[in-house]
Image 1: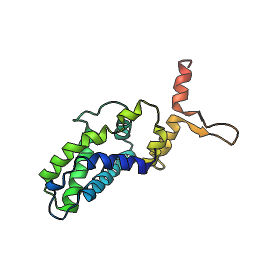
Image 2: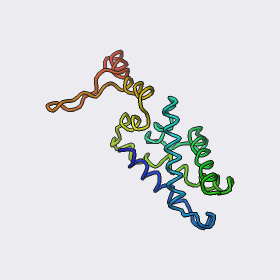
Image 3: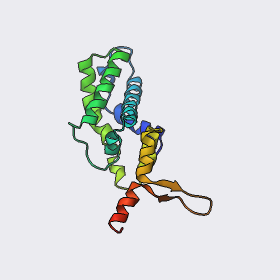
Image 4: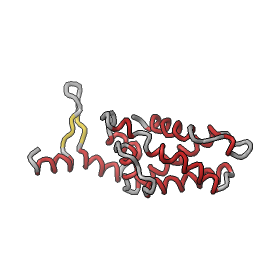
Length: 167
């Protein structure tokens, strides 16, 4: 799943909750959904850059995100700020809108997580570059492949931990 696919899923979750009748005159629900999705992803990117991968991991964990989750609160505040500044939406109205869609955004990937269709390392690397991305690479191990052999994880802290337990 690439960054654009993640964006599209998040945007579709938001679009389902944005009611154009709640918006100020001249503001289109499509623009609000796009801005909100960009803000959510920007928030996750900032968190990942700071070393906090919990929001990304939570989205792809297969478990429901609690409404009092600090990652959700942080992302919500970012979206409220963006909607207020960009579209002139009253902060309390923006807060109400965000409260409607943020739980579904945070849980949009949970049903898909159980199928094993996610390469979490690849997803995280899309939110990071250098620094924390290298740390994640070291945690999961290198992906090695050539034309004759499939990609294989080697090294990494996870392999070292497995080795301690004879796995």
